[in-house]
Length: 247
Image (spheres, rainbow, N blue to C red):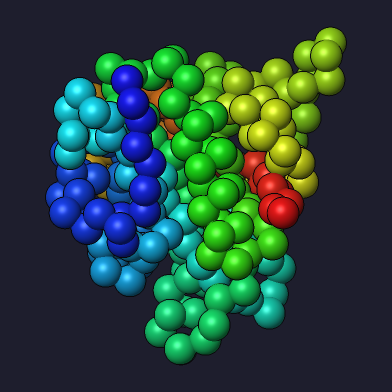
């Protein structure tokens, strides 16, 4: 496979392919309302901050994609509301006509049938190189640890800083970031928030959501809080801030 990774600005014809790529995202993860501030304009306002990857065997069919958002803020550049925070900051930066001075990774997704083939580290490396080419001195990322869903009741403050005997993170995706030159900074305890009625959560997960309390949902990094009396459930996802100095 001859991998080709470019920005979407260089190959705008791949815009529609972004959404056709088969992936493993759980349906509830697509319901964060803040996401529309980014994905609604991704092929226009953010095309130069999107990476698309295909190969010579199937030109035009994506094997992976990567999203970044440029932003500027006078507040904490690594906000406690992580992913939601930088998406909102990026939207405000654009709406106010300000010049961004930071950039955050939002997502690297590999096509379902190619998971485990080493594409994620290649995409992360390409993202670092592209951010540097755009003039940024640092790439930050509210990272979603890939194995945390196996331990939904373990606090992220404990999980994120576990290491193996060689000193690298125990979590596979955090380990990729550290190997690439990233540094784990802190936890973003409320990085994404998804709220819905119990009927909506049943539709997203296939679970009954018929008892008040914590519900463990496949793919979730912590339990979803269900309130039967008030007919809603809320998922607050913690992520991990990683800093990648560039140059």
